[in-house]
Image 1: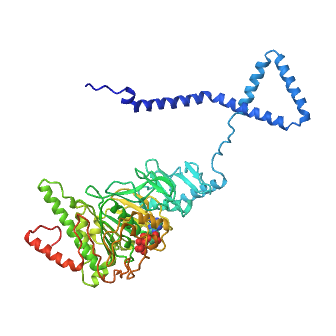
Image 2: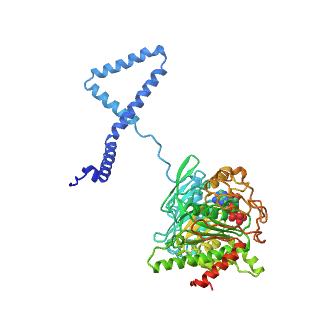
Image 3: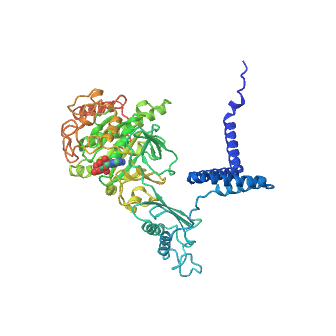
Length: 589
Ligand SMILES: Nc1ncnc2c1ncn2[C@@H]1O[C@H](COP(=O)(O)OP(=O)(O)OP(=O)(O)O)[C@@H](O)[C@H]1O
């Protein structure tokens, strides 16, 4: 049966609708222009009528008869005069047009006295930087006029600059970072400290634009972000600096916020992340936020807690969490397994490719290694004559991208120099949290931020840079430790709601049924190094050996990390298997 064409309105309805909408909008604009005089006269007649009504009500009752008589006499005279009604109508329209005119007072032009003083003082301060003795027609000269130097300026309600365009002479060395930094420093001081500014240099036009940045929102709590698998939200940034926004819930409210999204996986150009910050700036919080997102997308996690403060205890035994290690032995075992698992995945994937088969499912499940403060183990392992755990990260860092293994390392800002070359070379996604100087930021991010760092920042505030991209301001969503007494109830519930169910018992613990999942009331307090862990057994800090490393059990497709007693047997088993069927290894003897 021949197919009947769709009615035209359905086949190209979208274009037609858009055209009709455009026509309607043009017609409405035209009609408003044409009807403007009528609207003005109508408004004026209304004002005249209300003035007349007011006059009538204000007139005392005993004089109203006289007033009425006067009005009637005027009407009669006008009616009897030649062209009287016509002239009266014209006069009424003229009076209505006058009354109906737009009376909004025009905005005062130019700055007021205080603002002019500010502009003038800034101009004087810039003279030494933007003038040369040999310049025959200097734009900046002592006692000169600022009008040409500042083509645009806006002030906020407090009288401080909110926007400023500075015109500078062409000979100013705006290509030199040091020269720019001097000007930016001066403008920051003059425009008021404690706020963040963005400086945009237009080298073609010799213009520098200063924009005041709004503080980033600090009230975004952990929640399910609308992202695709392989995408991780690091935090939120300024509107207009990233392509997309994420719909978020904030209590009853919904809003769209621009995220900094980090892409991992085989096509990622920044497959691993390094997070740096001073203590208390929120690095563990960011790792927790990443962990919850990774678990949501079906990843497996191995967590190394070098801080030893039990900040990841809430993740122990959860579905998808292979282990949370905080003692040197456990960390070495876990990372050794991760290196071997990376190799195994690569070999299995290569074999499958050579045989023309799709890569096996168990090589594609994302594996995340979240390593908090590896530098804490460097000293300990040296003292004990054991391997530095960082050296075990080399294989996952080097080959992790192809094997769906992602490494996230967090450490203190001043530990950057003590991190291994592999960590520094392969972590092309970078985050710095907390207050940091321009040199520290440049060293950590590879480029200075375009905004002025401020001394006081809330926890979780910092900068992110993905590969060679721009440096973004960043605010990490609040993802506190739910077992910390200081955590607010709303935040605790938000994090607990995102945790997968517990499927593996911590040592000596019963697996709780789903309704038994810990809630805020039964959550144990955060533990200090060596203090009791969630299950009541001692949780060893980095300086102590673990009593019994967590026995991680891998779900479904992931090889099981065996506890130490079973470990030896598993090793021997693997050794026997290898002897029977030797396979080449990558990067390891
Ligand atoms: N994004 C955030 N929003 C709100 N509060 C945060 C945020 N990040 C961190 N905090 C709060 O700041 C405090 C320190 O955070 P966190 O433990 O993550 O810092 P840290 O850098 O890991 O410090 P340390 O290494 O000393 O543990 C905590 O009370 C935490 O709740």
